[in-house]
Length: 151
Length: 275
Image 1: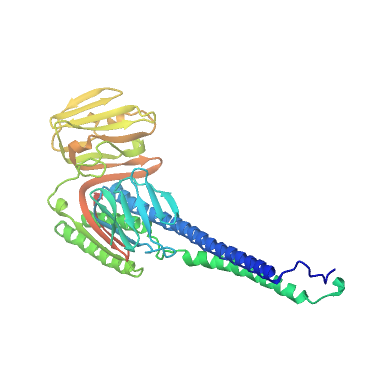
Image 2 (image 1 turned 90 degrees about the horizontal axis):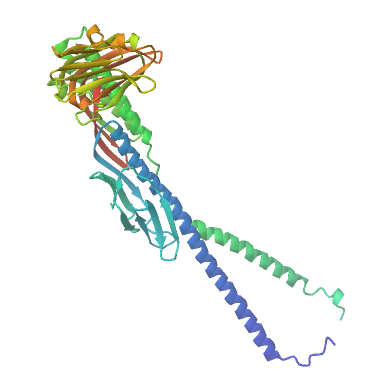
């Protein structure tokens, strides 16, 4: 019975093998593509969290220095705090929207990676929407308000 | 054909298993690699806020010490400004060297014009005209221990300046109101009226009923409408079991510059002296 090769076609066998191979490879390629995309998004989100929280700390630091000077009834002549942000994360540019209505740092990219980090200041904050690419930025206290500018 | 004894495909199965396991391991490693490769790590240390707080505090201490050293009894009065500047200069240059070792650059400068022209501090919290007018000078004072309670070279505006001694229930047990035409003392035992004369007031004098009016128990001394008066004040006694000393003459503005690779800060702070 095992040697019975009736109803066995070499062509059908080849087609079946070919189809299965194509399906398996297609599945494999799609899996890898999804994997890389997911990794990229997760990495961006994690990076956004780290950078957003770092930026919130820097804004709070400037605010603390303003308050410290105010506690001694001092006047701030110059206060500038420079910092760098990567020009791209996972080879993708992104935007940083710093709102003064909800006091949030919203970082997002075209691929849907998005995070919002809250921050708090006792003085006014000038709302800004900046884009990665400049790389270097400066937090400046000017006209009784904290402003963020590209360097 | 005996299937049970046919071992021809064993190596093929083993190879398939190894390739499959290898694929899983490679995938997991690739995933980690992609994740790490995409992560953006920010370089640079965070700024220490304490550095600037320390700078302000040590500058304040040094200015007050330099003022005290240059004006202490026995010092040559004509050299007081030079002596003050010399001590501050020494402090500034030493401080710059210390901060330079940590890669930070600082500069301390000072302005003694108000002192030179006898522009006395206001009786506000920070001594400036725009400072907080109502403030607590010292709390938990044992009124009977107050050995000095003196105002000299004072000028009061028409609207007046007030001192209040409040007990732990925030009830005013004694108050003195001074304006350009006179003073009014209100206390638990009596009232006295008089004129402010000679720009010198010693509240320990019996005519002001300070010590005589305050019942046992700690009081807090408040200056109210401190922006309506300027001059020198001096209060000394015991508060909370410890000796306190409050004396203010002038305001010395100091400009502090603090530079690091990332931060540039320059601010001017008014320091009252000697306290």
